[in-house]
Each structure stands twice: as structure tokens, then as C-alpha cells.
Image 1 (cartoon, chains in turn blue, red):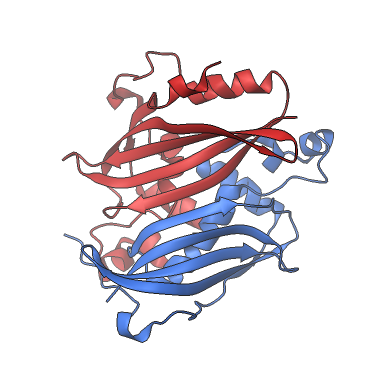
Image 2 (cartoon, one colour):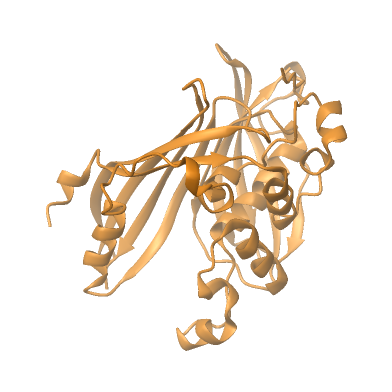
Length: 142
Length: 164
């Protein structure tokens, strides 16, 4: 049976603590790779001609790619296998060329029947501070 | 269309296989090079039995892990998800369909080699007015269970139709 040791130390974490930032410049290749790996072939993400015909400036990123990128920042910080809840709200589209950066700020912690839990508020922002995703996570700590 | 009558209706069901190839490619696609997703030795060194699936993987698992020979009976009786029916009806007058919110609740680890059974249903439908436009929210839930019937992951999400 798997035995995962939580990476975060409950006693050492307090509200306001921030996780390391993950930054990524979005490319059209990212959109094509995510389409192939996820099965979401909506042409608005992969077909520049179709996207322009629909009145968009270019293809735009999958919301679930953004969620995957932000999820990576959460698991880099809390350790893979320690995620209990991960929820987001999609607020803005992402565009190729934008630099997306994660923001993870601890908002609380609690001891529960399922273990010691750290709660954090999440966001993914572009280089101008525009929020693309906002959300919450609950992760296990030791 | 009386939307309330769709609350509680099944949207689908399936059996999915968590396989190393799809897990590794999916992890790369969300920019995650963490070796636990790609290398059995790294996964085991970190305490896993097998490479785990990254967060959000189950959302794509119908595409990634479905084998035709072990699928359950279709709970919609061949009609397909009632969500599609509602959206088609709403789109007759134009508008836009948006993915508004997405949540994953993990009850157990999702690891390669697992066979999961999912069942989806509509849990709520409501409308709101925003800037003079009618927004119709369809809230859905997919529960993935292991072979023992224990819940492994619950996905809660909504799709929004924004009227013209």
C-alpha cells in the first residue's frame, strides 16, 4: 500500500505564507499538446483560422490547461498525493504569448478526521496582474 | 422547457483505466516534469505503488482511459447527457456556453493500474440575470469509485449558458 509523507509541516505553516511561484509563457504548442493529451479538440484552442473566423484575435488556452498548471504549483509545494480538494473558477481567457504566474497564499489550517489540513487561496495571473483563475485548495500536512 | 425536471438525472457512466502512457503525457501537457508521473522508480521512492495521476487527470479520463469492452450500461438509455439536450435547446436562440467552475475532491490516491467506475448526474440548475443577460447554470457531479465501490474522486463542475 502506498505511504505518502506530507511535505508541509503543519506547525511551521501560518496564514499569509506563500508557496513558490510557477511562471509559464503560454505558446500555441502548449495548446496543441494539451488538446492531444486531454482530448479537448475544440478548434478555438487549436485552429487559428477558425478562431479568427469566429471573431477572436487568436486561439486561446484551455481553461483546464490553466487549472493543470496551477495544480502543478500546488503539488510542487504540498507534494504529489497530498491534495484533498482543488477547486477553481474560470474568470478570463488566456492567450498565447501571455506569461502566467501562480499565486498560492495560506488562509488557514485545521485538524480534521482526515488529517491535518492546510487551506490556501489560489490564483493564476498574467504579466499585468489580470486574474485568469481563482480558487481554493485543501492539502495534507504532517 | 422545465429545467427543474432535469435535476438528479444521470449524465453518463463509464469504466476508465489509469494507464502510465496517458498519465505521463498528460503530466507533460500541464508542464509537469516531476519524475513520479513518468518513472516507476521515482514513484515508488516517493511512497506510491505506481505513478499517480496528476491533479485534474480524471476530467480527461473518459477520453484517455475508456475501453469499449468493459463499459457499463448507459444510464441515459442511449439519449446522451441531458446537459447536451438543454444546451442545444438554449443555443437555438444563440449565446455562449462557458465552463464556470471546476472542483476535484480526492478521497483516495489515483494511481496507474487502477480501474475506476464513474457515474455522473445533474445536481442543480438555476438561472441568474447579469447585465441584462440570462445566465443558466447547470451543476454536475461525477463520482469515480474503485473496484470495492469506495469513492476515489468527486468532480463538481458547472457549465453556464449566457444568453444573447
